[in-house]
Length: 348
Ligand code: PHE
Image 1 (cartoon, rainbow, N blue to C red):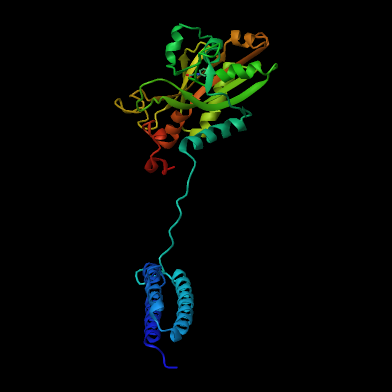
Image 2: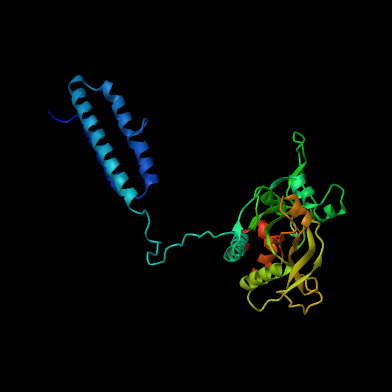
């Protein structure tokens, strides 16, 4: 039986479609081809639409061929799809000899690094690290540290009060890590005590190059028989030697904190000007950078903890981690640390 015109037309159309398919170079063009040829309004569908007008004797044959062609084209389509997916569509502009792109490596935050360094030294000196709450009760942050309400010493710590109206007592974001001195003593019936307490503290203050409203501290507390100021000095001197090197000088001078007697302030010589620049923005011309407050634990606090102050004595210290980090890393503005800008952070 001679082929009917419409069967010939069908074959020509599908042959052309097949030819076009093999010349397609990318997935976008392939998708266009699929819609044009196999799609709901595509070529094959359109050809099939005319089937009702065909004479009876060729209608069946036409239908068979059309179905066969559709199956063939669908196969060819799937093969081409796999081919195109497995070959990069354009290698002409790619230099395959270039080194690969290195993934960006993360790192510990500079303050985390310094906190760990500080704690490493104290661990070697025999201290145990413990942590405490950032939301504190008024009595632990102030009262039990001999800072009663309305005492002028409260002015040393500007405070973020929290809504604690449902509680017996006012609560706040702790202004220092010293409350952990009390908490630890209350939960340990007998000395010796030798702890280091890292943690965040919050102060409601205007920020500048050396003051932030959030800071990290490491608190030290040692209670034992026969502890003197010499132990405090020796511990801090050894710590400073291991942190900053043997060349750096530390200075201890008298200061006041209600929970120690005597109280001291410890400073290190200025890394920026070595004390030679009267207008130095870091040490404000003094040549010294204050790193920490410290002193001998007040005998009343020792007694309050249930220890005999005639038998036991101790020292406490609280250092600012950011201050230490600034000295170690040569950073001149404390605000950089918590700005979280990548160009700064990625230097460490
Ligand atoms: N808590 C004091 C502060 O934040 C520092 C300090 C700790 C002083 C321990 C003496 C003893 O300023």
